[in-house]
Length: 97
Image 1: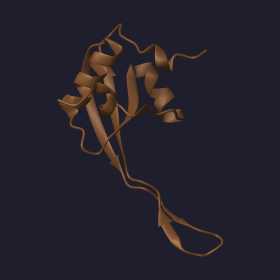
Image 2 (image 1 turned 90 degrees about the vertical axis):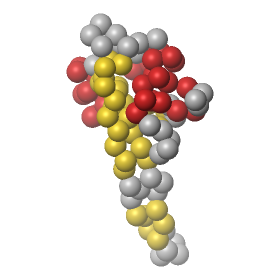
Image 3 (image 1 turned 135 degrees about the vertical axis):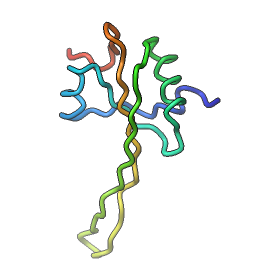
Image 4 (image 1 turned 45 degrees about the horizontal axis):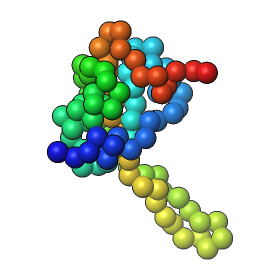
């Protein structure tokens, strides 16, 4: 099994992720090779919460253009995990200040 800190890369901070906090759903960036059971175990071990559901989403990177040379590049592909926690559990990392 992988180390839990290798499975969870970083939390996603966006308007959509903050809106999902009301439904007790937290969003994380994970490696493309991470599976749902690995993500579940990593979140449960790092934050000491119980996970009800894990949904994943593969997002392709956008195509970008270099203004100076006119060449095209690409942003990296990203996999996101939407983790639903049990009632009463929360992660303090996402709480407002």
